[in-house]
Image (cartoon, rainbow, N blue to C red; front, side, top):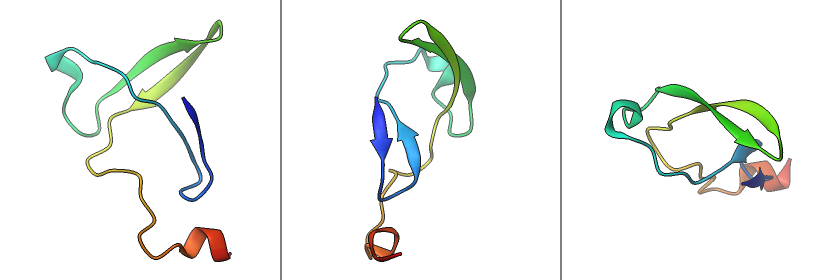
Length: 55
């Protein structure tokens, strides 16, 4: 995972079981020994107009 500066969110790519694949599903992941809540997004985290970079 990494921080997506242009979208202002921490992002990670993970494989999930079908029970968690629906957008909005939440679960916990462990990263560097710390448990974090994760949420499945319906759309890619993307800033098509680059507004966040200009802010």
